[in-house]
Each structure stands twice: as C-alpha cells, then as structure tokens.
Amino acid sequence: MAIRTTGIVPGFSGTDFVQMKNQMTELQRQLGSGMKSDTYGGLGLDRSLALSFQGSRAQVAAFQQTISLVQTRIKIMDTALTGMQKTVSDTKKALLSVDFTLASGRTAAQLTASNSLDAVIGMLNSDDGGRYLFGGRQTAKPPVLDSATIMAGRDGKAGFRQVLLERMQADLGSASASPERDAGATGRLTLTAAGASPITLAEDGNHPFGLKLDTVTGQIGGATATLTAGPPASLAIAPGAGTTQAGENLTIGFKLPDGTTERITLTAVTADTASLSPGQFRIGATQAETLENMRTALGDGVSRMVATSLAAASATKAGEDFFKGETDAAALAGPPPIEPGVARRLVPGASGTMADAVAFDTPANAENRTLRWYQGDRTSADPRATAAAQVDTGVSVGYGVRADEEALRAAVQNLAVASAVTFRTDDSLAKERYQAMTLRVGNGLTGQGAAQTVTSIQIELASANTNADSAKARHKETDAMFAGLLADVTGVKNEEVAAQIMALQTMMQASYQTSSMLSRLNLVNFL
Image (cartoon, rainbow, N blue to C red; front, side, top):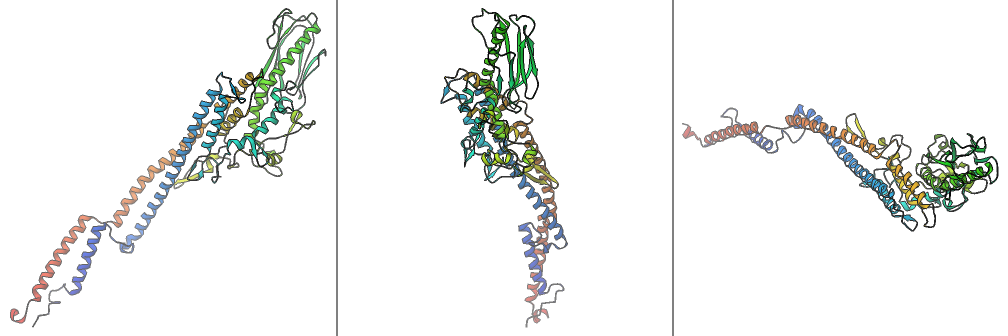
C-alpha cells in the first residue's frame, strides 16, 4: 500500500511545483531577453513610466530623422552654390580678357558664358529625391526654365532676346533690328543742325529711355554752355565772350539707363592739327566756325557713346527688365493683381515702333505676352522661411532658397546678357561696345553694389545647419538618458536573475528529492 505524500511536507503541494516551474520559465525568459515582461501589463505600476519613456524616445527619433533630411538638403544646396560661385568666377575672368576673336558673332568668352548659363541653371534645378530645392514653397517642378526657352520664349510669349531688342530700340532711338549698328541712332537726344546758333543738345521727352544730360563742367573761350535740368533736360552752347584757346575744354556728363555715367570732353586744338582724337575740335577762323566744329565733335561723341556705352548699358538694363522684372507694389496691385517678377515690357511710341517709346506696359499685359524665366514660389517675403523644419521642441530652422533671390538671379541675368549680345567683324565700334558690355557684366557677376551675395546665402544656410547640429547633439544625450530610464523600468539585472534561478533550482531540486523519497515509502517501511 502506497503512502499519500501530497500535503505531508508543508508548503510543497502539487500547485507549488507548478508555480515553481512557471517561475523558472519566467526567470529564464528574463535572462534571455533582458526584459521584465513581454507586455506593458506585466510591468505593473511601472507601465505608465515605460510608455512615457518610449514616447519620448520616439519623438527624439523623429527629430533626428528630420535633422538628417534637412542636413542632406542643405549639403546639396551648398554644393550647388559653391559650384555656381566657381562657374561665375571662371566666366568673369574669361569675359574680361582682351581677346575679341569672333565666331558666329560671339567671342570665345561669350560661348563660355552660354555654357556657364546652362550649368548655373542646372545647379539651381538641384533636387533631393524629386523635391526641387531652389523654388521656395514650389518643390514639384524645376524652378528655372532651360536657357533656350528663356532666350527664345515659347507658346507665343516673348523671351529675353525680344525684350533685349525692344529695350535697345527704345534707348538708342532706332527701329532697326540692330539698333547698336544704326548710324542714325540718336540715344533719344536731338542735336541742332549745322549752322544753327546756339548749339542745342536736348532730350526728346520726359521718359526713362536713352541718354540723360547730367552735368556740364569746364570753360571754352568764345562759348557759353548752359544746362537746363528739365525734364526733359537740354544743353545750349551759345557764342560768348573771349577767344577760344587750344587746350580749353568742356565736359558734358550723361546718365545711362543702367545707372552708370559717361562723359564727353570737347577739347579745342589748333587749326593746323592734322588728326583729331575723339572729342577734339579745331579752332576756326571765326567764332561761328569754331562753334560749328564744336557741334560736329559733340555729335560724333554722342554717336560713339550711343553705339558703345549706351548699347551696353541698354543690354544690361534689359536684363534687369526681364529677369528682375516689375517690383513696384502699386503697379502689381492691378487690377488684376500680378505676382512680382513679371518682365517689364514697352509700349510702342507715336511712330508705332519702340524708337520713340515713352512708357512701360501694364504688368497684366506683360504677363500675357512675356515668358517668366523663374517658375518657383514668388510671393514669400522671406525665402528661408519657405522651407522650415522643427528640429527640437520649440526650435525650427529655415533653409529655403529661391532662384530669383538677388544674388542667384544676378548670375543668371548677367550670363544671359553676355550670351545674347552679338557683334560683327565689319563694325568698327564692335570691340569698344564689347568691352563696355563685359565690364558691366563682370561687375554684375561680382555682385558690385549688391545687397546680397551667394556667400551670404551660404552663411545663412550654414547657420541653419549649425542649429540643426546643436539639436542633434542634444537629442543624442536626451535619447541616452531616456534609454537608461526605460532600461531601469523594463529591464532586469542578469546577475540578480541568475541568482534567483540558482536559488529556485536548489529549492526545486530539494523538493523533488523529498517528494521522491516519500513516494517510495510504504507502511512496512514506515513501521
């Protein structure tokens, strides 16, 4: 007869063995996973802390992912801007060289400028996984059109070449298809005919086109110069007291459409001077002959300025009309309202041509008939704010850039001007006009007098990147802290678990041995 063992040893019932086995299984799981429980419920009262710490770490991870994205985009933009600076610098050096060898109407430096224009446009169309980075809030399409479209236009809308031609016609006062080579171009000034007294040089109206009389300095005996400010301004040179002496001079200053100034200096030379330099005139046998010679020198000087400096200044101003466009808030207000940057187009004058144009068209009309080179966001006041990312609680960085910002637009604008103007080998003033153009383009590419440079944009992006880096470092420390707190709540110490397993194994082994001995006990053995 077997003896009942269950319950004979207090505290070691069959249920106790099952509990010890389950406890052993749980301890082995903890030792293997390092976690107190597979579920939050198993953590008991600590589950709320665990959930809180997990949420904090998830937020930190989200910030870190945002920072990584922002820094990748900033790196792409900085690389593009650095490439732009090098391209522009190399092009400027080429344009300021003395070489004037033409091939199909352009110099080698102009061909370089054309290639550089394509390269700069490509850089401004940089993207990150299909998100274009230089269009402000408009990120779905390239912000800058290709150079061929910019130059020629499309879909019935004029491109830069048309705007350039019309502006030059208006400034030079010529309806010719090549106003810079038109001997009859006046620069919008009217000079009295031969024999007239006094000699009068007058602006042809109150408008922003052509040469503007600005200053008169110096003195020539036998002549009196009087400048009437206007507008329109006029200069009268009348017979005066005294006798003209060799070496006496009169300097007339002009303002050009691009804001630059030029001068014509009329200098008296003796009657027997064989060859005259620009601005020189011979002293005649009579006062009237001297004044007529002066009138001829003045007319020649104006014609030369029109074909060289004025043509170059007009091309530069046309670049501003097209690429910078209309910025006057009152004009853009409409109706209908038009976004900034639409090209400024001219209205033909009384002749039906641009040769006597006196006004610009409305922005609404210009919008309907002129291409926009920049296709991105145009209305945001702060370009950096067009792309913002939260990198920490209460901390955001702005890293947006627009291709129509002053420094970037100036690069496209001046490279386009250098690429668009053409020259001919049979034009005696072509080289001088080319030099006047490249000087202005070079200054524009340098950013002379500009409020913004490419470097200043890079500095602002670098500041955003630094702020993101600082947040990244803070998040690394914060994540480490929360990871430690979470480990304290959800984790176990392997040494303690191992000790518990050893103690439980000892207890279970002793219990099993006692149970085994009791299971072999019978009445005979017991008695």
